[in-house]
Image (cartoon, rainbow, N blue to C red):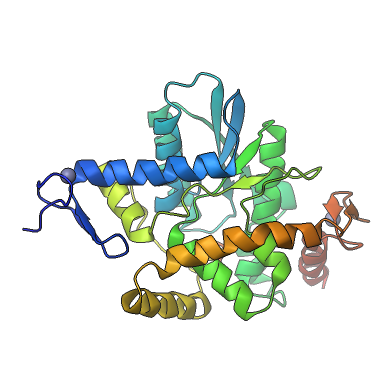
Length: 308
Ligand code: SF4
Ligand SMILES: [Zn+2]
Ligand SMILES: [Zn+2]
């Protein structure tokens, strides 16, 4: 049995990027240290704050909520509100929604649910059945981001925390570089400044690999969802995952360096985007850079189909 590099007990994990094997205690300690480091780097928590937490009920967002509760357990001036967006995906989101409800109840955290059906008039399943021009993930992602931001604004949140892991984040950075999408690279967050109408996003899990998020969930007996979203198209993101896995095998620490690269170029990119003024969407009045916001543009596509 491999032994912990710090104390000699049986190891539960080997971290190729740090060259260490860790026992359960030192693994948890290492996760907490990186999580707190990112929190400090991304937000300001000295005085009372409300953090809205995007909780899908999937593994990573459950780990995020568990870690936030753990870190701020003694802080009465930090309030957590979990937000779950129910897109209306039968056999998938209905299950994770129940997991999210059980988790928030166990942790004693306020839980808000917002649904596509109530806010947009249709579930994602219903939208997909209309065969709109784009893939389900485009509508799902844009509408979910809007609903999360609105719910976080209504909750009076100072930050919106998302459960992106090191792998998710490094993949997204790479994808946006390869597609030359600078705007998306900026939007990824973390957001260091407040723009009117938007709750700044923080991503405190971006130093934690997905494998470690899973191990943390198992060691802390968190319920894990086994169903996959029926619309998940793995091919595209899967390619970036594969590239990164191969890079990681060849040069351990690649994902960490991509996150570091993003952190270092973000201020310069933000500077550039500051000159892009926001104005009110002609349809819904929410802040946007164009005449009509993305949500209204996509809604129009769907409702045109509905009327057809
Ligand atoms: S895989 Fe696509 S459709 Fe499914 S939850 Fe994710 S973004 Fe939405
Ligand atoms: Zn140890
Ligand atoms: Zn709009």
